[in-house]
Amino acid sequence: MGIKIKICIGTPCHLMGSQNLIEAVQEFNKKIETDIEVEAVNCLDKCKGAPAVKIDDEVYAPARPKDLIDLIKEQLR
Amino acid sequence: MPKNVSEVTKLRRRVFSSIAQLAFEDRLAEDIDKLPEQLIPEQGLGYRCCAHKERAIVNHRIKSALGLEANGDAKNLKKLAIQALELEKITGNNIDVLDIACDRCPLDKYRVSDACRNCVDHSCMNVCPKGAIVIVQNRAYIDQNKCIECGLCQRFCSYNAILKMSRPCETACGIEAITANSDRQAKINYDSCVSCGSCVQACPFGAITYKSQILQTIKMIKDEDTIAILAPAFVGQFGAKIKITQIKQGLKELGFKMIKEVALGADIVTIEESQEFLDKVPNKQNYLTTSCCPAFLALIEQEFSELIENISSTVSPMVALAKVLKEDYPDSKVVFIGPCIAKKDEALKNHELDAVLTFEELGSMFVGAGINLANISEDNNCESANDEVATDDGRTFARSGGLIKAVEGAISQIDPSKEFNKIKAQGLEECIKTLRLAKANQYQNSFIEGMGCQGGCVGGPATLMDTKFTTKQVNNFGEQSNIRYSVDNNEAKAFISRFGSHKFHRE
Image (cartoon, rainbow over all chains, first blue to last red; front, side, top):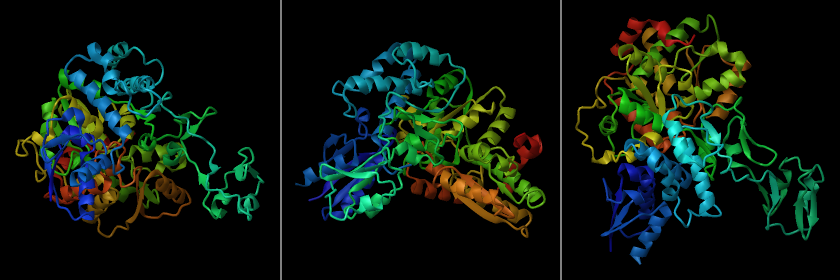
């Protein structure tokens, strides 16, 4: 079972650390066997809650890399 | 720049973006009073005791973001906004402690933790040269009046039960310019401070901040022709996928009339500094130190004044480029954009510069103006990497070792037989060690490159990306130039012959 994650790299999200989210997912991906497909996107239309992430069809606003990994773990369960 | 964007950094950027948005939309004075509530929700952010305290602190953050002194009265934001809009020039110190936000971290350096088992050996007590350790309630206790902070007890405890406490701001400062006063409040000693910005990054309470020039810059780009000059560390700052043409186009959309790379100024500096080395070393002096990094320059001036003669008299790339732009466009304003807070101090001493922004401030301005660089087309009219605007050597000035590479390259083209010993120092602590050796006459025929930040400018306190990543980006960007050596940059040479070498030297 794979998950598709879109991480916004638009300027508002970049300033709020979206590059850290991408790194965190890549690290996590190396550790587990499940395939996570990461895609950098230009905007998820949630600039106020930056950084924005889309997992499957739902948009989230994980403040820290750890919050995103928790979200992914929940999805994998 | 630490790997992860911290929560206090995010808060500072939110404050900056909000100010930028209000300024762009011409409703700063009207709506600034609503900002604290927008930035700090009713339930608070969980940093402090309550939302009220957080909002009181955010008022001071806003005040500093307006370009005003962070401390003092910050209740009436509307009044402060009007005052800031009328501000001609930033005055006073750029970096300051927000007194209200300083958590007054404990001073006691060594403490005994729960891990103490009150063992039979009591090696802590035995090793203590001052008899400062006693047993209280079945546990070792350090009498702080007797403790001389030698750290022996910590080293000898078999349970690692003794902790060393240190204040993050003091640990981060390479020159001991920040200390606690009697009520444990952090205070900066401005006679020693070189504005490197390490403490701004280090404080986990976000209690140290710097004055922003966002508001003054927005006013400038609205009212006058304003030129943006981009420090060589700009490549990759807005993310791995954002191209330099997108950054430059973004600047145009903000309202800047022209965008220039400071790497061109770096080429001018390389030509002048290599000539200076050839002329002065070893005839007049044993070594020459660089002068581009304002923190390194201030360090020599304040702590090693006997070495001043050995500093290169060449101006920094920022000043060199601003000087030629002011000749060609005398009615335009020039704004430097870089990774550095110390440049704000340097600009105050050079009338050619009208403002200095950090990459963080620029990013916040993009957000405030609703500009998303990712949505801008890469193929636009802006100068790209292969356009002959600067050389490889000029572009790699941004990383540690870059100045050595450039000046060595230039000298190899002029006089390959010249003896050229390379000395490199990055971070203030290493700079101090190197300058001590210089003072002890340990260097001959040497070129000393000093950069106040680890990794050079790419590791600056107001960068948006990791140091390693930007170093690679800067190196690649340099390689894309068609010209290798600064001495082969015709535009730089033309400027020097038009205005004369003396224009690019400090008096």
